[in-house]
Length: 263
Length: 343
Image 1 (cartoon, rainbow over the protein chains, first blue to last red):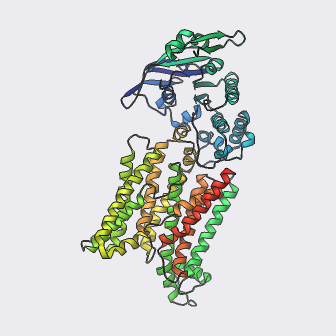
Image 2: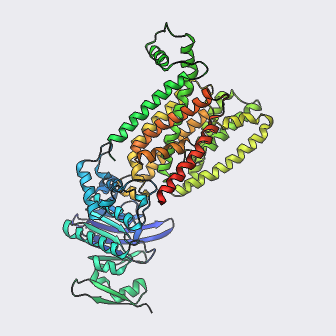
Image 3: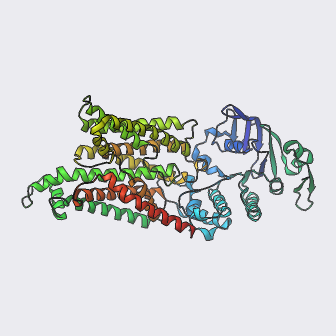
């Protein structure tokens, strides 16, 4: 049941902050090469689940398996070469240039006391080109706008060249144009290179448009784990988010569109 | 992160430091030319006596000036490195070696040693003051850590706040000791303002024994420090054990600070200005910045000490001098940087 065919498999996972239980008895399997959306209300434990997946938090009980091996048996270095995180907030008080910050994504690939090799710089250049920030390369990060900064952070994660990309509401501070363009780039990576993405997303329409599957968190537990067309139903939205909505299934893309009822 | 230019600057700073040491050794009441200084050092190394040089010069160089000069250089370098490390760990470019209240701890320890000797209870003050200062600094560090570590993560804000609280309590304690010292309060005040007068080879070696290994140790973690500028959470996902690096380097930088303060008193602004200035020139990469800070800090404090020792008509306390020059200078670069950011 912990076979390596699953990228992640999570068994009886529970986690608490101090005495507050945040996640209770979670069991899920995640496959390779898919774009997973993680949705749920505020405080439903999305970020916590992502941190547990990245082993930056340790569960109280239960086990996470990554490629069939318990996550805590991997070294930090191995995990850093396999999993990359794009956080929601990013700020920096030191005047590193954009290319320096993107190069930091190569950290797990460069041995201590070695200098970056040519393929490291290549990966950095490609990542910057993908995120359309090559022209900012020598600018200090503290002089960038929020949207530019978020693309730098995204490029840093891409330069890490991992099999899994974890996004913690990575686009929630961006305008709609940049949000769509970043999501498109990531979607393309999933299709072309078999990248696996696990993204906590607040904007349900965004999740519906780009994800293959969605994990829904409700009351410390996984309420549903299914393809997007099965997730976005008026019943589920009422049950999980307490909102009324109509769902329109666009015939062209197969992705659902959600029309919320505001009055 | 090209390597050619920064290495050249490190090389240049090393040359400047060596030149400054030799030039400073020659300055003072007895003028000794740089060539004579080099000859004295060279002959000392070979264990020979010189025939052509004034026989008092080797004594002045080896026993009077060099210990003081090397101590001031090591303290300057140590404070600058500690400052750079504190800034990188606390993610705050305005942090300095005294942010966590270590100077107050050392000052409290030293004041205690002085007041005890005034009351006649103590062993010789030249020994007890640095020892008490060091113990005071370390006790403060432990106090700040235990106050800040409500969770395992030791957040920067909690650390800084804990430092401020403990420093405030210690300042009150120092005030009380000064009050008790009554007419002899000047001994305490004078120690607090910092001085390198009468330093011996003993001071040089104890300082070097902490500062040099400390520098090597922090250099080992320089790249992790760079990554930690991304924030603790992201750094963890890049394979850096942030909380471990943070704890070990905080202890290391605090040890460096403690030994510097206990050997020389409280010398302000070196640990703030040098990292700042060099970061503006060299960029924030700690692999280059840390050794550059050591060399730059050493040169600056040695220069300042030479000014008060050899140039000024009467010695003023070195801590006062660095703050008087450093303060306004810091205002200038701070202002300039703010203007550059907004334009």
